[in-house]
Length: 113
Image 1 (cartoon, rainbow, N blue to C red):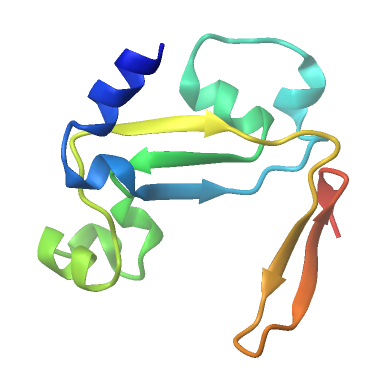
Image 2 (tube, rainbow, N blue to C red; image 1 turned 180 degrees about the vertical axis):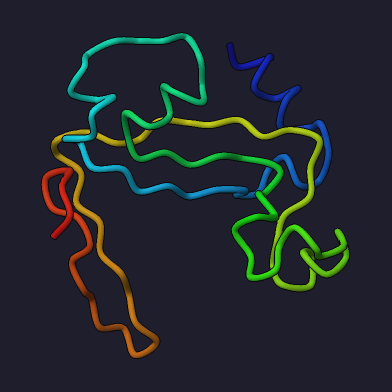
């Protein structure tokens, strides 16, 4: 395990950076099904997750028409990898933090606040 993770993280500079943050309520239909599909495109919809590596250009305004350089200028990550890590549960609390440090509840106990 650890050796494999180290090799993945050493793929390139972007492999150690966030490429995605997804907030998914614990009550999502995929989560409620209790099934494991062994397909990341389905399984990632069961829980909040982060991904290391490549970002999705479609998440930027006009993303599909942007060059890789423009995406990077806007803070997008470039990598040969994109690996999802599930972090959600019915106990997760997430707050947004404003510029002045104020906190706003986003999720409580795995659900939208």
